[in-house]
Length: 254
Length: 381
Figure 1 (cartoon, rainbow over the protein chains, first blue to last red):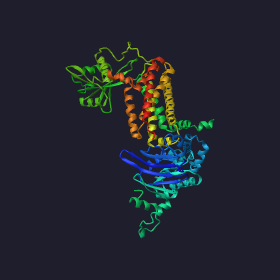
Figure 2: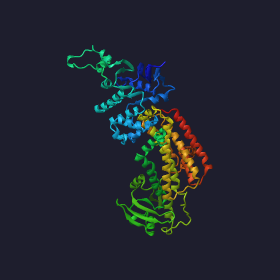
Figure 3: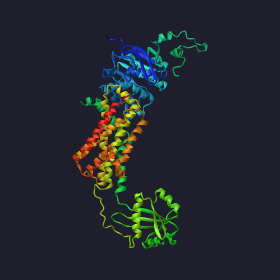
Figure 4: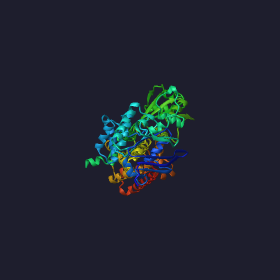
């Protein structure tokens, strides 16, 4: 039976020595859906994404990607997944173009697609620049370009804008919005920026201490928090931040 | 066809490693220029016949400038008889310089310097001199460390000089036949050692450190999250390093041939086979070292812990026969010793395939075993 989801996570548990990073998570993501996994540092976001990427094995539970488990399907699944890890450092003395060509070669992709990607992430002028000479935002755009080089069906981005200034962050958002408009790629994005989740994703999953606290569309989630008391002096639009505080008693960036 | 090759992942990985290597000036300096400079420095220092200057402290009164106490008057008269030159250095110490010329062993300049016992001990501790003379009961006494070969040599030369009654200044060593033919000089011993050491260091840093650094920067993890063949990653890294090793060894040999007229006495094909076996051995060790850690600091420590003892023990700069007898069989089994000895046997002694079978087999097996062990515990993430 064909599953309507491209990612299915069933009661997944993962521990490292004395730390239980993920404590029973269920999650389904459909084709073309952009999902934000929102939570503070140490919430278990990265571990969850690493299990979906096939880098980590769950201790318990099941993960299926495009209807297939990782075991025995690695080569097939890797062809269709694009990812960007937190703070990946590419080879410093390769140029932007050489780095793209290198990763494209892993998918047997030629230079035409590299040209497209270079344009997509607005790095044409930096084609011959060594990675070491790129700014933080440019490096992150390169990482994003590499993650899209194989026109993936699933894009996994682990905190793609952490450490970037607001301008650089907005540039990344623009690229991802364009991707959403032009393709059927599904995306999971982990972040601890509330605004990022709101801007890019229609479905939000709030995690903390390895568990899902709430999940739903932005409207569903905001609808649930109309009753949160707001002092007259703080009259403003209620945001996901308020929901997170009401759920955990602390801010996302704590 | 060209498009197909240029899209090939192994080709791209190899090119990425080549670019990274040639764009790093440090790699070229430490891999190529440094061994050449080292061979030049050591070759000149230990191969060319140079004058030896030996300072000898003479303690007691100022007996070298003509006011001797009874004690060392014999020495003064001897120096005067042999026309020793009176010199005064910057510190105001008075010395007499006596030159013994020898067209085969080289000239020796004995500089007899008057000083008190305390000053002599300071210079002895600093290594500025290794022998002190004084007098007791009308006889010259020699003070030196009997375990210091330089001091022993000075004593032997000096005691011969001072007990000779005839003129010694123009003494010629007719019985000595100096060996300066190719294969017997220090530089002949040194160059094979430097080549072997270059292979080891290059593999250790070029393979081990590169893997650990890529792991620590999450690049390794990023790469294996694509359909990249893991074997291609290792093949590219090791093959570029092997190619670099051959270039480095070739340039060092070329320099040694031009500067010191070093040639290969034995079988060149056997030498190349030995180079390949050595590369396999060190690449295998490098893979094991880098198999697990993601911390470059630990990587540094591991690489040094493996390479430093071999550099000291394996007879790169000086023969390992100075180590205790019981340790020699162990030292001989070290990969670096095996490689250095093997290269020496081919380059200097004229060895061929027969003599190379043992080191080639052992080095290859060592590499394969270490490689397999490394791959068993290798962490890609």
